[in-house]
Length: 273
Image (cartoon, rainbow, N blue to C red; front, side, top):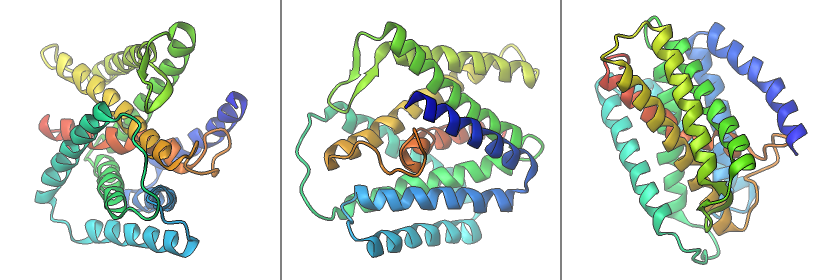
């Protein structure tokens, strides 16, 4: 499994980095929409939509909403949309803390399908807005991706080496608090790099480090929330699209929560909008 994960990552990572760095925002938005589209199809299955036709219809709905957001959402509304998204993730954190392994009702869950829109569309919008930020957009988006990737690596190795205390055993038995500490250390290292890269004033450095840390912690929330949905549907992975990783949602679940939080921080700092 680890070998497959590494091979898939070595193939995809250079392609993602090249696309973010070299392509204009309109093309990046289209490619990200494709990624989210695959995730939407998997979310349809998590919502209890078993028929392929229904899954594709749900995917088209998500893509249509993203297109409308891209074409018609006034720039002045972006902050409100992202702020509401972050509030929703705080609610998701509360739900995770209250989850006791309740049984999932069989069949289609309309509320779950609506939640897919709340999760996927703001995440996609956040990535697009970050990329189109004047001057440093592609760098900031690449930094966000590297922050999440490095946190995953830090969590994996710290969890395997020192993991003893379960983080959320009812949701994801494999995750440990020690793994989160490893992810936090990786996030702080990335934050120090960002402070150095932008030659940040000393007074602002703690804010940058805090943003990186909070973004990483929300990435854990995104990961756990998808794990909760899979557990309630009796699924191990959201799909089989990516060898060693599972489905597309298994690869982007951390970003769905981290991207809005990171963008909101940038907007509060006056670095994006």
